[in-house]
Amino acid sequence: MSRFEGKKVLVTGAGRGFGRVLALAFANEGADVVVHYNSSSAGAEETAKEIRALGRKAVTVQGNIASYAEVQAITETAFSEFGHIDVLVNNVGDMALNQTSWRELDEKVVDHTLAVDVKGTMFMIHEVGSRMIEGDAPGGSIVNIGSQVVIAGSPRAPQYAAAKYGVIGLTKSYARALAPKVRVNTLGAAFMETEALKNRHDWTHGRREQVLAQTPLGRIATPEDMVPPTLFLAAEDSRHMTGQFLLCNGGLAMVGA
Image (tube, rainbow, N blue to C red; front, side):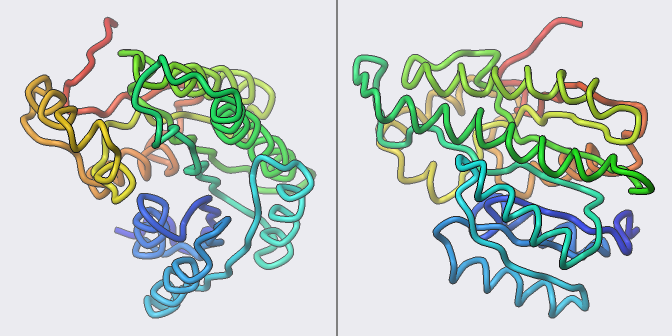
């Protein structure tokens, strides 16, 4: 099934990790992809090369999403290359990887997490979403990659939990602002064993085992596990969903109806 045949998709942070996996998954379902990166130039080019090998179009674009001017440039490139964007996936995020405890309060680290996760996500939704609803534009879907941390909290890095709560606020706000042409939803992703997480200090010193013991499905998610729910939110499968938070975490945290 090719749910995204002929669609134009922009994935932030697609030069590595989950963003790369997502970009290739969209291409496998027929999409042309804008591969965004900030510092992973070589990775982004490799992602684009693999997308083209699938017979789809791919362009790379560099930029820091925490800068409004750079987000404007990213958006201009995406729309200039493809004419329109059907799907935006805000994958880029900062979880303060080097922080091991709430006691390690560093204003620069806090500012960076909030700038990337809240400002950056807002800038991307605002710029791309605004163009999605212009005139005869076909509209589309925006998927923000959130986290189950909003349910459980983070004694390691409280600003990360706060930032991801901010993403939920942005999701609800822009779901109303951009309706009815554009849907905006957030995936409440589980811990994913990306290279970044595997190298995190607390993860290699007992946190992995703790999370595993508390997860009813009995395993830590891979990036590939998070692809189906992300594509579901992007596709017409979820056409009557907007402003929602979809939790997908193996049962680690459960919320009431």
